[in-house]
Amino acid sequence: MQARYRRAVVKVGSNVLTRGDGTLDVAVMEGIVDQLAGMMKLGMEIILVSSGAVASGKALISSHRKLDAVSARQLYSSIGQVRLINSYCELFARHGIVCGQVLTTKESLSTRDHYLNQMNCMNTMLENGVIPVVNENDTISVTELMFTDNDELSGLVASMMNAECLVILSNVAGIYDGPPQDPSSSVIPEIRPGDDVSGFIDPGKKSSFGRGGMLTKYRIAAKVADEGIEVAIADGKKEGILTDILSDSPRADMRYTRFLPSEKPISHVKKWIAHSDGFAKGEIHINEGAYRALTGDRASSLLPVGVTSVKGEFEKGDIVRIMAPDGHAVGVGKVSAGSVRAAESIGQKGKRPLIHYDYLYIDISE
Ligand code: GLU
Image (cartoon, protein in one colour):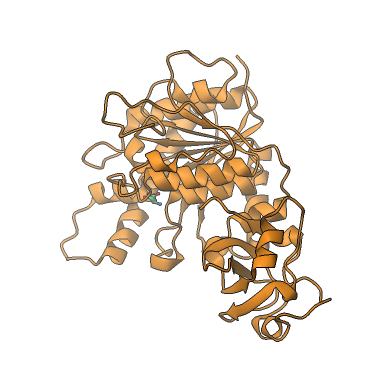
């Protein structure tokens, strides 16, 4: 057996790692760690993004005071993360593998400097044979500063670390072509770039412990695949599933959804920008001509002549959202001027780009 990828990010959801009562399911964790260790022995570099801190913390303590939602999350994650990382540490040690903890926040990845620091840290860990175990720092990232869920975080990590594959493990076998509980529905095995299967997914369905639902997973998977990274969504409790996805010898009886990667090359900076939507400081509204240029086949920058209005306060180098004439967001980019100068230049011809093509990410999938 050989490793199918050079470097992969594996995200494990709370529902995979915990039992119905919220305590960590060590047998499942052991199975996942054994499979990851097997792949590492074959030379694959792995970054593990693991949820489960809040769910397992909740099972560890019964608070005597009534807590508000934010304090509860802070308390549970602070104790649950210790339990989680200790379990991983012990399980990886059985294979002679050292694991390291990386706790991060959306805010700390919003500046390019911090993003590069975080990347450097994980590259150093990998170079030294250490497996990074990543989670959001739930003790300080609350409400609007939070990642939507760890699916979003894992997409960013896969892109940041230039992984060849992202595996999202949940308690569902993949994306179905109908309601998963309906016996006539089946798992879609392959989604190609440009395919839209979002219509099959029930938008209201959330998992019981984790924050994300299938629609978020689908959106993240499609975006990451569009950046040239293969993505798999699979049932993490299924024995042998990871080995099946990550090795070159798949079994015929394994069902999961694989997103084939797009073949167009995308630069590292663009990948960062693609995941920076949540950090946007303002909006730039564009006219029909600019919309056609930006969404067309040729590489185009956003010029002041195509701008109709500027909203919010931002500085040169900040991330802004680009809004189409009909008001929907079409992408994000890093601006070369602050909001005051950008507003002054509206409609002017022959000016330098407000967002250069290299710092622009257009997404017309929604
Ligand atoms: N960071 C959270 C935890 O470890 C999970 C967030 C999610 O559900 O994706 O509990």
